[in-house]
Length: 317
Image 1 (cartoon, rainbow, N blue to C red):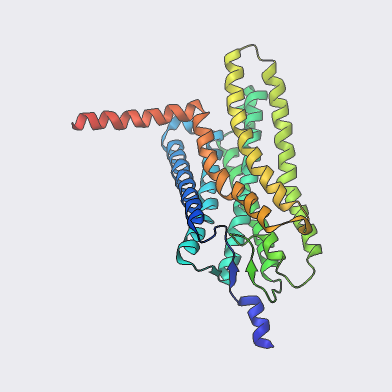
Image 2 (tube, one colour):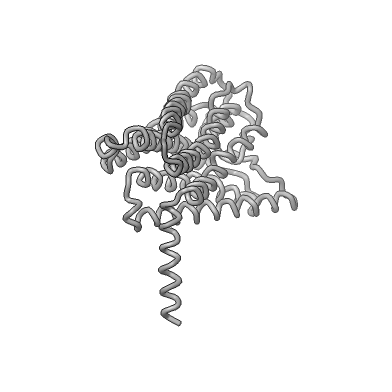
């Protein structure tokens, strides 16, 4: 009995995965790997552009650089293991590995929520209080907001990871998901987790509902100001920047709220898998694409880099 109890806490789990071992599974894996490549390359290019182009050394782009870094870590926490498990045929994950994946997933999701909120505050100050922008939003404040976002995400993750990994897991140890995710783990526990689910709801309200409400209020104020602008060009620029941010917010917050703010009884494995793709794979891929294609400053920096590269190549010839 002692050995069986120990296995409850330290035994391996089995990740059911997302892909079936057939030609369609291989095709879907190829699509996911393409998305992963786009996400890694897009976010890396964005980070490098912001780092090296002095015109992008502003609070907005400091926060955007942190968002891109979070996206790289978030998608890398999921796709490589998914691909390895599919190719190798091995679906097992160690107890420690599962706990580490939960910690990383919750950390990155929480951090990204807070960073997106900080970015909405930056846009609100820039458009609604432009004269006070250097005081209300400067480089130091953006660094503090970014650091606070990381710290908040990590602290929240530590609490949830410790609790979930201390739960007793009995009998079936197959996680009906492609990653170790809190709701999927709760289905395997052989004790009543309803009290903990209430804590998850409160935590989700703090990281999702409150920030989402702040973002909506910020953009409501921005819309009010923009509609009263006399310059059509200024209106277009403001709408372009804000619509990009709102597109990212809609994809990310929508999927996270739907995942973490539903009772366990309303969760189904298939739904959880599809929704998790949105905030672990789709959002990290879309973020750099949206911010690059809809942002003139980033496009100018990108053209400048390519222009220098082409000039250097022509000189060599």
